[in-house]
Image 1 (cartoon, protein in one colour):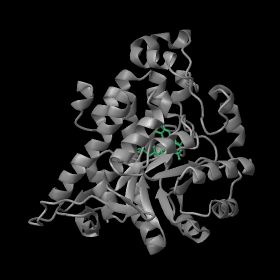
Image 2 (cartoon, helix red, strand yellow):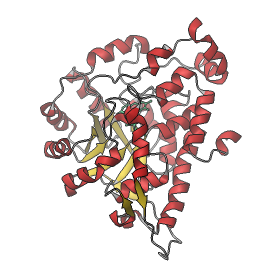
Image 3 (cartoon, helix red, strand yellow):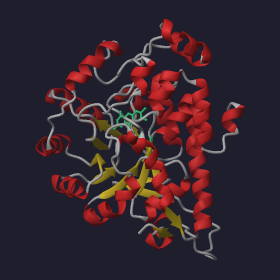
Amino acid sequence: MNKAIENAQNIHDLRALARKRAYKMVFDYIDGGADDEKTLKHNSTAFDEYRLAYKVLAGVDKIDMSTSLLGTKIDVPFFCSPSAGNRLFHTAGENAVAKAAGKIGTIYSLSTLSSVSIEDIAALTDGPKWFQLYVWKDRALVKEMINRAKAAGYTALILTVDLPVHGNRERDPKNGFTIPPTIGVKQIWEAIKSPAWVWDYLTGEPIKYANINSDLEATSLIDFIGAQLHAGFTWDDAEWLLGEWNGPAVIKGVVRTDDARRAVKTGFNAVTISNHGGRQLDHSPAPIEVLEDIVQTVGSDAEVILDGGVRRATDILKALALGAKAVSFARPYLYGLAAGGEAGVDKALDLFITSLKRDMALLGARSINEIDQSFICGKR
Ligand SMILES: Cc1cc2nc3c(=O)[nH]c(=O)nc-3n(C[C@H](O)[C@H](O)[C@H](O)COP(=O)(O)O)c2cc1C
């Protein structure tokens, strides 16, 4: 492992390393959010409103971080959120993330818009795998994708519902961001500043959305995706989809109690509270702010996952204490990936494992099911 990655003390250090290695437009695509990026920042700072009242003399010589999600046993109470086009960030791409997640005994969730296919990821790891779906207008295409995921052994479907249209991410047009990235006259200076990334990119396999039509170049697919995103999708369509999938299903992108209640009624088994990491509607609430109310609303009818802004193990503890079954995150592992491929993803996940173990001991909780509301003081 490269020394700088080895020496990273936290996710902020990995972010700085990603910024150093990756081509600017690629780093900004990971790092950026919508409009003024208020929600992007607030997702993390909202955790500061809660403090952790630790217990003493709790006999914390053995710490058990394992739990389960939708019946799948996982060794840590967190997993990797789906994220598009990982080979843009590093040639190791989704393969690196899927392998890293498998090594630590947690779930890997593959994006519809991944740059490695459903089948190739399935062949790579025996770890638990979920498949994330964006809804397309073409129902035949939707059916084909979920059938492929099922055949390849993905055990749950994640339906992302906070992207009826693309959010306004202003860093991207400013940088001239395209998929695949272009290195024209305007970008040449940025390219010179990130030689390792540029070399890998120019000498590697072309980047494609591997699940859609492997014969098409990513550039021509952008229009296809824009035209196919189904802004007209409704709860009735979601019910149809669940019937087609006929298995465990997660709805991702909910921030309201009425939507959470409707999701449970529609048949979803888990609700991921998320605003897409502040990439969609700016000024939407931070997941941690709405967690308690949503947990109360769904009760034991669905599991609740918190997604967005998690950068420290204490964020995970706060989410679990307020009723989340687990958390998920994307940028932390994407910073690791962009900084150093699989070693960088390993490092990001290891930072969470090491600090969660230490922080559970400091909190006075020996296992995940001991973490309850009594540990929270502050906003309540
Ligand atoms: C670069 C990038 C690509 C993403 N692609 C997807 C995607 O394809 N599907 C999806 O459901 N969410 C996607 N997301 C959102 C993440 O799954 C997750 O909800 C969000 O990033 C959580 O916030 P965090 O990055 O602060 O952990 C993406 C996020 C990022 C940063």
